[in-house]
Image 1: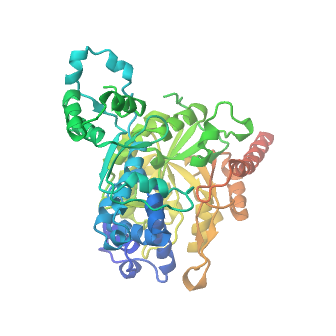
Image 2 (image 1 turned 90 degrees about the vertical axis):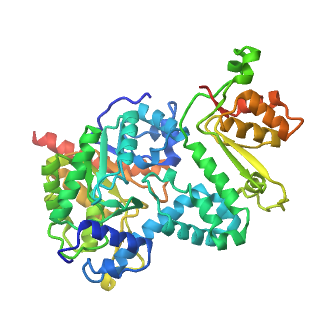
Image 3 (image 1 turned 30 degrees about the vertical axis):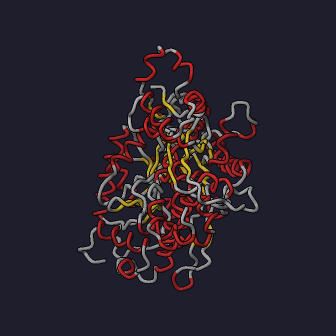
Length: 254
Length: 294
């Protein structure tokens, strides 16, 4: 090891070796004949990160198969390694990476949509705790003040809009489904992910309900959101939609 | 948050693994399936909320908890990630751990987290870096941390210190304690060609606050020149030579909180508890012999 090689240099060289395939610069700062040892570190780093992605994106894996997923995840790992040491935060960019990965998108055009749904599930599962808004709380408001009410989404609520039926695709690609049925791909879906208890819940929203939630997310009042919902779907039933949102902990008790 | 501040007794505990959390957290659970204390990987609990943290609260209300970090990267030349320090502190405030430990290793460079305990050249520059980082972490947490010896798969050219010498000086400079991983000593000794028993005799006994035991596996690819290459997989039973080194160490320095680490191919809880019971017999032997002498 040269006297001028600093610890920072060694760590940069090490990173390049374990994320890449070129051992030569690292070998130069080690004793001779350490290739097998370098391979242990490279394998651990890459395999453990791929495994973290398998845990978060099991349906993406099922859709394209273990071999193609492993290759895809490996490309992601070396291109976009984690920036935080808790791996529950790793994978937020996986869906975007899939969009730019020609092999993955050629296998299934809806793959990135499913990845966004799976990330939303993980993100919801690990989101902050907060009391959810119950229907009884709304009853305390005078009817004429309801229109101006602002409803805040619960920290664990996520909305995923896709031009593909991603929830249907997710459902038919569960491990217990032996024969994956044909799915009609022309149907767009908007899926609401919430965490009412210890489990994450996914619901496909009607066009009106989707417009309702989008409006609330952008800070509009209950009255304005209801108008947006009716504009998107003339038979939108506000009362029924709200009941389902209360049961599924969509809103936070602010 | 029901966690009560506890100390970890000098008995054998187990690493807390996801498949065992529910049965260990249960109040009315099978009393045969309990452990005297448990150790978590801190990084598995740094999320903002949700069911996993709720379950951890139940565990922390029942058992003394040790928080074992794998991601603080105390060997990083670029210093520590304050966001990570802050998340760890939030976890410690929540579970009020009896022990906090980290590794003599690094995993972060240029802000990228490599998810492995990567090796450090044992030089004066590295000692200064690790010392500075350990002091910063201890100041931030307001408590002492235990530093664990890693398993090594490569040897740096020009390393000027032995690991026991490095750890001894780190203890002197920072006041940190040591988490002595006897399996790692055995694995590194075998891979790097030093004497494990001699290494263990050179460790400052008073600084050792905890001991780790785990299983290793042999790489099928082999090491340099066809030599054996052992890998610390945490996926097997503790090997006989490691038990021998453990018994000799406990006999010399006295009982210490001892942990069975098994986090790959995690077995059923009773298997883990049987390994802990084996360690406990060695701790009991040492205690008995000490009291006979007194």
